[in-house]
Amino acid sequence: MGCNGNHRRYRRGCPGCQTRGRAYDRHRRGQMAAGTWLPAVPAAAARDHVAALRAAGMTVRAIGLASGLATPTLYDLINQRRASLHGCTAAAIMAVQPAADPVLPANMVPPTATVRMIRALVADGHSLSSLAARLDRTVHRAWMLANERMTAVTVETERAVADLYDDLALTPGTGTRARNMARTKGWHPREAWTDDTIGDPTAKPFSAAGPEDVDRVLVERVAEGRRPFADLNDAEQVELWRVWERHRKQRMESPGLKEFQLAHGLTKAQVSALRNAAAGLNTKGNPIRKKATAALAA
Image (cartoon, rainbow, N blue to C red):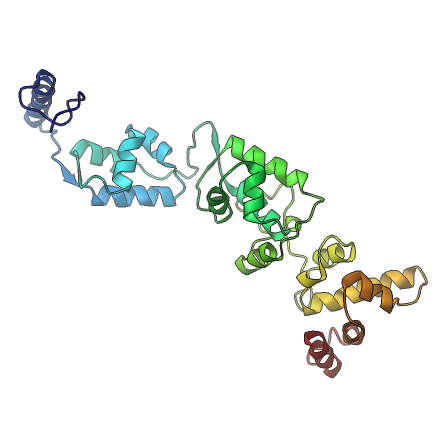
């Protein structure tokens, strides 16, 4: 096989390969004489170190800048295309230590805000496929973002997601499957974050949960018609009736059983069960509550 013009694969009789080989031999002999020669070593240790650096938040490009190595060299190592490394290459990789605040390239930013915005949009009923289409990204890339598989994102991606997040602020999605996925994965909705906390990795999500896990913000959104009744758990459904009844009393109106039934697509029995359960919401194991829950399940 030939050297293909790059002289990295030695070919007998090729002047370029001979020149490269002689230069390498001079370099090796000089380092051996100085006692600084590092022989080739297995790549496993360096590969594990790179994996640890990436887990600590460093990008491959950041590792390359810190070690003085080309990015393709690191990817060859990561993808197990190198069984061994030159000693100096392995030493340069092992010398890199994770920084307390990883140094990112100028066009890259931490993914915290982007991940939380994508998750909040899914929790609001927007599927990953619809978000990917709006962002002009692949579904796989949207999945990678939502599942926090990227240690950094480009400034362009962060801005695109932020713009979409603002555009859909008053447009709840219609994907029940997306909402269920977000709830299963524990992804927090828009209401859990403020402009100051959504990009802060140390910030904790705000929870409007009260007794018996009642998300009062969610209840208010259902009452306003911005979220479907099906998003509520049993306790939140009862709280929705209490909110409805309180608003009717403030306007000095009748309870409005029929109006509540039509507004949320319920049966007369379900509305009656909610009304009965509201009286015993704060009493665990109350017989009225148990009967109401059974009626709702039916």
